[in-house]
Length: 276
Image 1 (cartoon, rainbow, N blue to C red):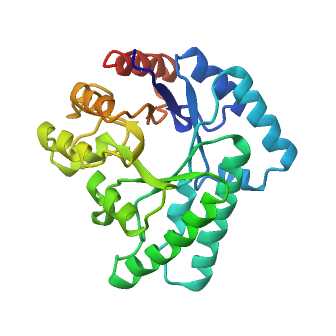
Image 2: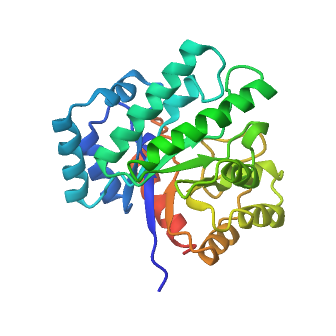
Image 3: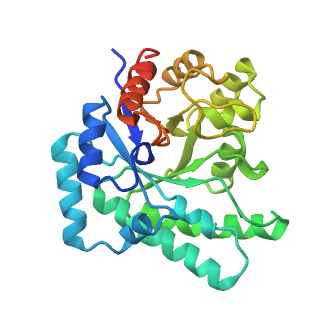
C-alpha cells in the first residue's frame, strides 16, 4: 500500500492565529504535518531568534500532537536571495540561510525549501547567476553538516521556472543534500496548462524531487486559485509522483479570511487525498 504524508502550508491559516491553534487546526482538517514558514512578516521572521527552550517546546509539542514541522519554507530569503551582488545584502542572505537551517534542524524539519531565484526584485544577470551558485555551494555544505536537505522550488521567474530547471541547479552543485521541492501549479503554468507536457516535466525530476507542493493555478495566477478550478491535472501529476516514489506533499493553501478557511482546508485535504 502506498504511504504518504500530506501537509498543510502554515499560511492556510490566519496570521494572528496562535501557532498551537494552527497545529490543532491542521490535525482536525486531516493533514499529517505543517509546513513551517519564516517569511517577510515580522512575527515569522523573528522566529529565527527563538531560544533553545522555545525551539524545544515547539518541536516537542508539534511532534506530540502528531503534526510535526516536517518541511520548512524559508521564503524570507526572497528579500535577499543568494544571487544578490551587494555585499551587505549578501551577508544578510547568508545569515538568514544559516539561522533558518539551524531553526529547521531544531524543530525537527527534514526539508528546507528555498525559492528558485538568483535575484527577485532586480534583473537577473550573468553576475547574479554566478553569485547564486557560489553561495548555494556554501549553503548546501552548511546544511549538510546538520543533515538538512535543501529543496529548490521551481517558481515563476525564468531562472528556475520548471522542475527541469531546478534539476539543472542540483547538477551544478552535486550533493545528496540538494534536491528539488517541486510545485505542480508552477510547473503547469510553465507549460501553459498542457497536461502532458506538465507530467513530462514532472518526470524530469525523477531521483531529485524530495517533496511536492500541490496547488492549482491558471496562466499568470500562481496563488489563491481554488483547488479544482484551475488547469492542474492533479490525478496525472500525483500518479506520476507515486511512480517516482515521492511520499512527501504539502497543500500550498493561502488563507482567505472572507470565507470559512477551516471548511476550505478540510475540503482541500479530502480533494487531494481522493487522487491517492
